[in-house]
View (cartoon, rainbow, N blue to C red):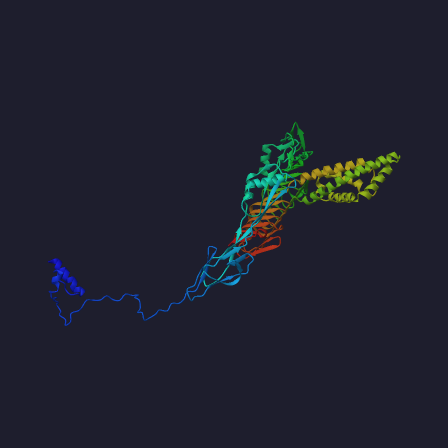
Length: 630
């Protein structure tokens, strides 16, 4: 019963006439019964026409023809033929020397119509890379450098383009690096050049794989070792004292060094396999009159400050002032080093050829030192000069070297002149006149140098050096209108005096002095080396150093001048007190931790002024550094 009911309901909603569940031959006898009777019984329902059905044969649809297109894909030119009635694609070929296009075996250029099936060939002229090698031997022939020069090649590639009816061919350039060179080829070139020595394989491989210009030291010879004479070494405790205090004060009879054994020289070989002789033996440093050698040990012959250089070892005299220095004790002049156990009171003056140490303050006083200056206290309304004789010392040493060379030639001429005069029986007075004529006519430059040295000896600080007095006495006879006793012995005596004076000045001129203090107020400080303030800083003072100035505290007012560098913790004040900092060398630089307004920085003529506060300022125009954080 239920299947029959479901079957009937399905056909009621579908609109079809009711069907019987009886067999086919019995269905015709069944009369369908509907709830709603209609006059005409509805027939079977026809389906709707499908979308896209073919139009009737009487209508024709218009179709637009398709034109041909051409495009470039992965470096290849592809062409699609047009449909019937369409136009051919056009290929525009530029006139480039690196591009050649052939169509069916014929070169073409400009606007060309292309079809599918044609033989179209595109060729580019690539430039291969060029590599050359060159061996460069150093001047001392102890190393050889291989220079690789690379000319990068070029590859022309077609630029991909989308399909278009009219297409312009375009090329792009790509660099072509050279292939790596095998080390055996480079070694063959080395053997052909006749080079030998220690080979740097890693450098050779890096050079072979380089794709740009490069050079590297590939072969090294064996460098000879200079023979060393018996050397002098400082004792460890003396070396530590010098590092801690800046200089070493010795007492008479104190041991401070020893003699190390000599070192034999070793021959070397250059990159051509030839023997290289070692350089001549170095000269051992000379010992001054303040140093004596006892059984291979160096002992101080007097109390003073130690000066240790490659050319000179000396103990300068030392003066120990046990109390404050006042105006009644003026002037304190000493050829050596001075230590003041107190302070310099108003009106006091200290002049020394060596270093000066002041354990107290300096107030309204003057300090002139040929060496370093160390002040434990403050400096107020004073003038302090460290290394004041540097210019005079360097000028004297330059003239002394020229004088020694000229005196050696003059001594030889005087010897020959004396022997010639003795064979003729001439007296010694005539020999002296002939030697004077020889000095005036053949060596005018020597006489001018002696006059310059004599003028320097009459000026401080050379007047304070006791070792200069024998030279000054000897020059008095040489600079007369007609010097008496001018002979080979006199020339040798003058040469010895010049060498002794030069050695004494070399000891004074051995090191660049350092001026150390804690704070400075309304004073002038000058140093031939460095200036270092470890306390609160400088107030309305002028600081000038030939090398550098380092102030841990603040610099308020005044001027700071240095030759190479300036490092300051703080510059200027919040009230805007005018302060200037200048560095003379073009490669110099200025570093300031805190910079206040109305301060000027100058490096070799380049200025920088600020009206706002800045932090961590580094002003170095030559390095391109000029920055600050406000």
